[in-house]
Length: 200
Figure 1: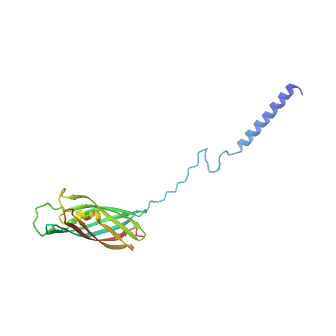
Figure 2 (figure 1 turned 30 degrees about the vertical axis):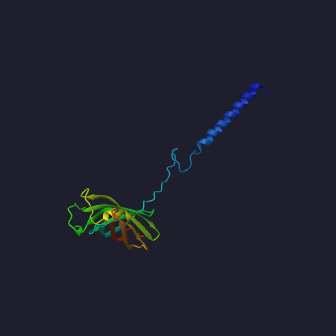
Figure 3 (figure 1 turned 90 degrees about the vertical axis):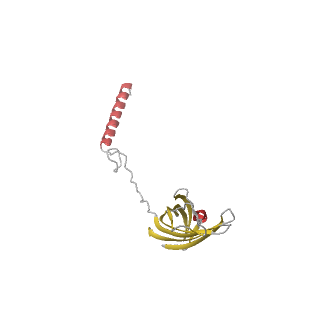
């Protein structure tokens, strides 16, 4: 076959192939059925709602006393009511003001300015049916005032352990520690937890 005829045959083959390709392309959708106009499919996002924390009504009453080495003592009573939030992780947190119930009762007169409220931060952790709470002072009013009965001096040592917690629990904690000057601080704290929402 001459060179010219070979070229002519190849030209015919290429034209036929091009025509076949165009014919197939005209009848074929290059995109999958769920894709419109060549746009990428929009992924479907499933957003799980954030669970609401369990809310606990927390209340405590603490009777405290400062016994002086030289003799005599001062006693006070404090009440705190607040709400604690319990997250899925089992951690609990809240804060509130402990309010002094009446003036300090002292064996000898004192001219010192008494604290009227003590801001308390409450944190804790649930372990099964047991909830443990600890307290921390975050401030007081009036600023710089003293707690003559010693409640403020025992706050950091108070650990409230609620056992067999259902929707309500109660516990009592006694703290007795040195005042660093041969005297002592003592507090007896009774506390309750009552579930208000999201109860287990």
